Image (tube, rainbow, N blue to C red; front, side):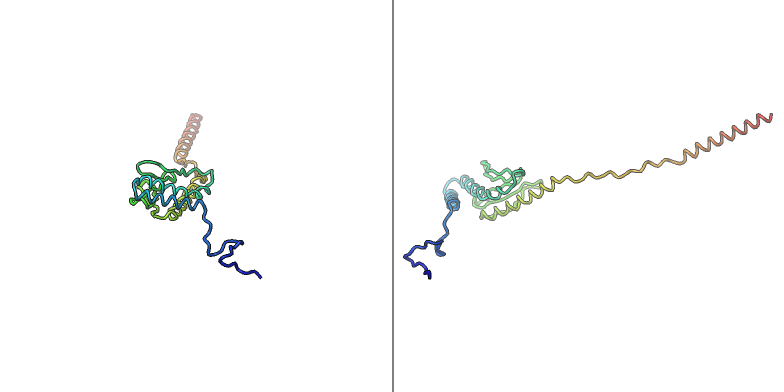
Length: 190
């Protein structure tokens, strides 16, 4: 019968439930970037803090965009380094930082103006909103790519001809024929 190891004995088979899960390097880097962005945001250069936060979000979006098929070229993701740094998702949608420089604001430019699609301090909320947006854009693309069948022109009837002119022409021919017969009969009787 096997006994459980005591506190002085190390367990060799698996991870003990009270021990923390092994930390992945990627998770540690993400936490370090967030801490650095928080310190930078508080101290001096708010713009660099915005870019750092957008880079963190950009890294969080990598798994989503890895699933987008290569043949779909709707999305052109990248960070622009202007007066207001932005993480572009496509031509009309981007993420920028809110006024407090810690809140992500996911917006879309429309012909009626800019609309806010999502706003949160939490990266996971914005990733979910971008995922929904990407899915909707891919469905819109599918619908746009479907070529509807060309509408068949309705069979048009030939234009109706007036029945008056053939009647008038027939009447005149008939009258001329009767006149000609009457003329011939009158000439013979002379």
